[in-house]
Image (tube, rainbow, N blue to C red; front, side, top):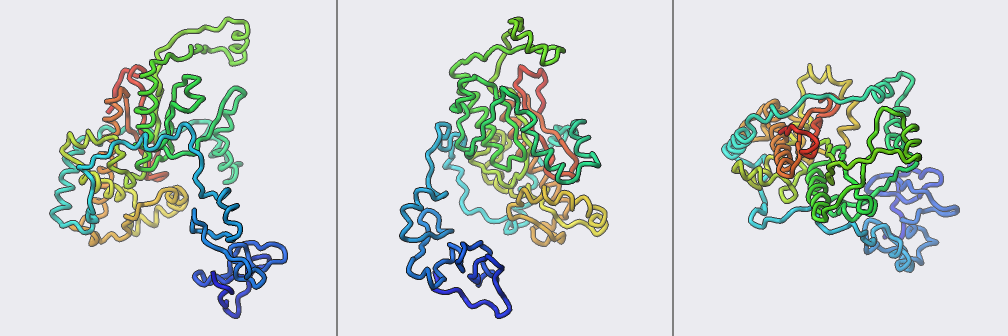
Length: 423
């Protein structure tokens, strides 16, 4: 840390109550608030003459911040970067899948470095493997009248709309409801060690809003291989379920108090259903992917998967539109900008429609179609995985592409819950 702050431009002054240290790299003063009577913030206190006797050093746990050397021991006990005790439901890599050392990818070249022949071969394999898959997707735009009315009420501005969305969980906070938030990577989450699930022998419904790339595979394995398999091994029986009829909840509660409840056993499954909004296929990983077996039956492996997941970004990477399309879609794109920012493009964004960046001179439309096929093939591997595990899965479009380009929903029910098995 320098003993004094760099000399700022003659016309620049720090804002009132803000740090007087000039950040040379950003060409502006530090914007941190300073303590009463101080000129510099804690991070730049070493630049102040009165603080020169105390030395600041990099935190050994996280070099992104500094700490007074004489307070290091105290800081290490409360630093946010310190290793925290692991909960019982943390099991390292329990949902990661097995590492196949024979299929480790070694420095594969970028797509832009592939020869025209190599790219053509990959696309031929993709088209052959994905023949007939488009017919498996249903078109079912989902909405709920109550939510639709609330969100389209002219009396509700942007703040009210945001508030409605934030209150979704709050609407279900009834007296006997239990809510618990777990801050843990899905890769290490063991559901059957969560007390409320273990003690209550509760079935689980997995719901995921845009589980980016590999997170979808980790979640599926967490639900089916970790939780469901463990419950079946213990051969657990569920608690009896109460049948509800057309009576109001108040009448049912009255009957319960009088001991007139109808109690019946029902066929039970640890995982009652799965609903996942899919996205960011370019963030998938072969090691964690649940559809490896499906890929192998098609004569594909880790190398093809690697390039397919990279090319999947062509479907949503925002390639340049024609001037006519741009002028007609400006309004919609502005409205969807926040949703697009929620998911990165993995560094594969193509903004030039010349196609000179790739072998074979593919057009924009060709790239988009190839990107969609890549996403569909990866999702089909997940569908086959769920079928093998005793579920009836389905892929369907759940919203218009003008709302979100990532508009495919993966649903699955246990086979006994639905007689139809949908690919």
